[in-house]
Length: 268
Image (cartoon, rainbow, N blue to C red; front, side):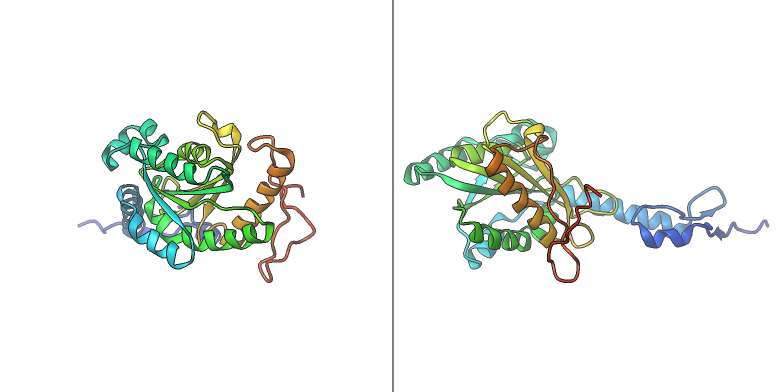
């Protein structure tokens, strides 16, 4: 009987220590080694689970309230997860009860707010469960220092990025920040995205927003994400705009003490 093919190590395998990308996996005959194939299938299953996982807004609301945040629980026009995945447009607007809830709240707070923060499951509720609260706590520290008024945190089930503009407009907020679970990848099922818009209104496009992505323990740190966001917010208030005309020129935080360095990696 012929010998079974054995796994052949790729000579570039040491480069795998520098990236989560699937490179230098080796081979067994003309196929992948068993370990690499099983690892791929496991990562694919994690990504699928992240997409279909539901966000427990009740539990998240309790966690936020324990930290001193006020909350509003809302829903998009997508009635369930299946419809949400099939109809992206329904995830971009509120359902009628949620819209009425914000109208009633605005009646009691006619002055409006400087900032509204919206948290939605997006395409990874896992990312929201893991990273939304610790990121929010770091953002709040800077909000208090700058003296901005903060609306109750809006928790949205089956929400997409553009829905933040409707929430911000209905709350009469000068700015809106949307925290949303990003589309899972095979190396990052729990990546959180942050979208910032100045003067939010229904009909805003992606060109009117600034995005800070890959917020997670293995990606962009909470401190650095909050630092970049606050810089964008300050510049947006000064220039009264956001989006493609507002660049992220925040100074880089050092890993040791979180103090700004003099250089900017985007300009170097």
